[in-house]
Each structure stands twice: as C-alpha cells, then as structure tokens.
Length: 554
Ligand code: TEU
Image (cartoon, rainbow, N blue to C red; front, side, top):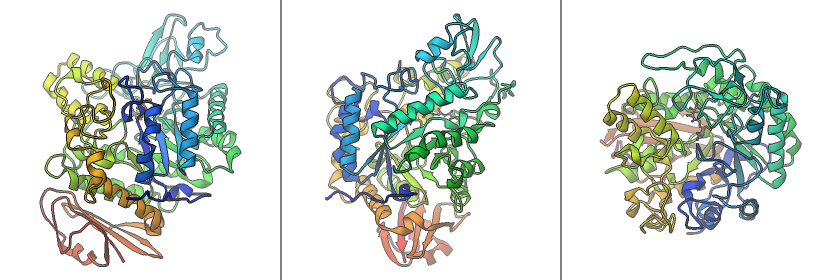
C-alpha cells in the first residue's frame, strides 16, 4: 500500500484539513534498549507516521526533568533530557519530518515548572530573591487541594513560606501576574520557533490566570481539601495573557504555518469560542474535556456507565457552538486518558468493530483529529490487578488518599483500572514479539498481554483492520472538502443506540451512522438516510449490525 499524500494545504486555517498524531515519547519506541522510549525510537518509526498519512506530530515533553510527572515537570525549557536523547537528535527529527512534509509540535508546560528549575531554586532561596514573585508564595496556605490529591501548598525552608502547586509538590505554579514570567515564557517559545518547530500544544493553559485573592474554596462531601476550580479555571486574565503571547511571539512568525493548540480541561463552549476565535488572535483550537468525562460521576474516580445520549449531546454542543466562530480539535485518547475502546466501545468480542466506529465518528466531525499512539490499532486498557502495577503519580497518590479516607482497596483498584492514565501509557504495540517491538530491554511500564494479537504488524496488510480504517479516514479528510468544511447537523437526539450526523457542503453531503451497541439497531426513521455511495463501511439496509458504522456520500 502506498503512502497517503499529506494534506498539503498552506496559509490561514491550513490545519483544518490536517491530522495530528500524538507521541508519548516514553512509550512509543525505544531506540537504545534501556526500556524507555526516546527520540531515536521516534525517528526510526517515521515511516509508520508517513504511511498512516498524518500531517503533524505532537510529542509530549522531552525536556530535562526529574520526571515526577513524566516530564510535565520541566527543569530546563531549552534542552532535551538524556533519557530521550540530545538536542542534536531533536534537530534531526525536525529536519526529517520537514523532509517528509510533516510538522513538529512541542508540548509547552508553562503553568508550572519543576521545583528543580533554576527559576524556582532561585525564587525559593530567600524572600529577597529577585525572582521572589515568580511563583505564588504565602505565609499561610489556603485550603485548596491539588489535582493530584493532597494539599496544593508545600512549605519551603529557604523561603520560610508556602508555595502553590495545582499538581504535584514538584510542580510549583508560575505567577503569570508577573510580566517578567510571561516574557521569560515568550523567550522560550521564540527560541523553539527559531529552531524550526511548527507550534505548541500548551499544557493546562486555562489555568495560568488565578484569582489573585486565592480565596478559600468549597469542600465537597467526603473530601479533605477545597475544590479550587472556580478560582483557577479560565481565570480573569487568561484571554489577555494569550492575546499578549500571540502579539509578542506568534505575530512575528506570520510567514510560517504554525499550529497553536491549548489544553483547556473543564472549559466550556463559551470559553472555547473565545480561545479559538481567529479575530481574537489567541489559539487555533483547544483540547476540551467534556466528551471524556461522560463516565465520571462527582469526580474522576467515581466511574459511571457510558451514556450515549450525553456523549452525543456534548459533542454536538461543541460542533454547533464552534460552527460560526472558532474551530474544534477532535480526540478520544491521550496520555491522560484510559483507552476509548475499553471505555466507550467493547474491547472484547467487538474490539475491531467498535474501534473503527469510534474512529469514524471522531474523524468525520468538523475539526482537526488527533490520533494518539495506539489508537490506530485499537489498543485497549491494561488488566491492572494491584497497586504495584501502577506508575502514575496521580494514581498512586489517589490510592493512598482513598485508603486513608477508609475506602476498600478493591474498590479503589476497580476505579484505577478503569480510569488510570497508565492505561494510555503502556508501550506501543508494534508486533507480537515479547516486548511488542517497543524495546529490547525491560519496558518501564508493562506491555499489554494482548499485544500478541493487537499490533501494527498484524494489521498493516489487512484491508479490514483498524489500522487500514484509520488510513481510509485520513485520506478522506485530505481528499473530501465535505469532511473539512461541511457543516454539522445531528440527525437524532433520541435513538437509544445510534449516533448519526450529517456534514453538508456545496460539493455534496456525508451522512455518518454509528451503532454504539453490541446489539442490532433498527434505524427506524433514519433508514431514509441510507442513500448514496457507501464511502466507509460495508453494511446495508435499515438494520445495523452490532458496532457497525457507515458513511454515505451523496
Ligand atoms: O493534564 C491536565 C490534567 O491532568 C487534568 O486532568 C487537570 O486535572 C485538568 O486540566 C484540570 O481541569 C496535563 C498533562 O496532560 C498531564 O499529563 C500533566 O500531568 C498535567 O497537565 C500537569 O502538567
């Protein structure tokens, strides 16, 4: 099978026809046999990305880091951690991608640094430090809890004060109120752009502006610490800061086709419109969370059954909310999410069918799709059975906090098995060899035992595989203007099994029908939509098979 031509679009909005592929470097490919993925491994696998047809590669952080949060705790923004390789290898990666017509997006983690970053070392050294206001210092902490359990404040001997950290204690929050901090971040951005990178995925960028009063927060039942969300999410100056960043940095690179993606957890459609309105010159698109919280109850570990109605409703709200202004990013999985096939699909009998269905529903919406490594072969959650098998600081912290609060270990493990971020971090499954072709050493996180069946090599030449299906969808986006620019209409908000929508464009229309269930689905009134050429899928008639998806063009 030949490579898929890249989208090749340039100029404003070039990314509308592009597909992004996310690599989590620790888990993608290990080039030196130490059990941890690295830049050499990525470079050795570029044929896969080119063959798949993706236009942009986003890599999670590879900067020097103590790895308290696997690199989302950066101790030097301008270098590469030896675990992953060297700056020279990163330069080579940029050049090799550009040669193949692909772009590189880096992860910018600027809400916080590592506590080992020289800025924090200096800020914490003394109350007289010239960088004393680069972080959030207080003599007394407020009652906020961190996103990763425990308090959001830690005491520093050097400063004889407490510092704020919304994530682990090794991730102190930068104080964006201070213009010196903002300009230091802008310098970092320019440094990477001058090196040739093509854009940024900005980590938790909607947390950079806090209510400067840092008011006490409500404590939810059964919790020890206050829920600080109202004081930190989409804060008072976040849009001002992003517009300033754009003026100070990106406006100077107008001749380059950059991609600016914000990670904006728990944001709303209303805020999403502001972040992505081209006239406001903030960001191109945001990674919002609503569709990956469908199965959360009062909080993430309170796991609820999948609810198609809610998923359909929230996805449609983003589609219509950003129809006249802004642009959507489309994703199911990333390094923070369990695998969607296990979550919203069926990772047993219908793994292949449900993985294809989920891909179809995602890629044919209006927006830029993000493929997370392993999505393209339908990778699943890992069968975690004990706390010792987890690596992630979020999971481990939550386990200890929940046990201390009196919960039963089996109940906590059940939540972690369903929702832990480690599900998305097990090594990429390249083939059926003992470590799935990921490493010749001992993998840092266990390989999923199902790699003997679920792997790239087994699917590459099979036209019915999940992998071939992804290629078909990516090609369709590159070739069919209705996929890129067609408008979006939900065709049913009440069918108990079917997600159906239309994309209408002057060149014609696409109709997507997807049976989100392991039972046959009678299309009922939707049967009238089964007209035109079947461009994806092979079914026919008014009854859909379990987990069947179809796309008609007319
Ligand atoms: O993730 C953000 C994150 O962890 C969310 O769950 C967070 O609770 C949410 O944004 C609040 O609404 C990013 C990275 O992707 C993740 O890997 C890091 O651990 C985290 O930021 C801290 O850098």
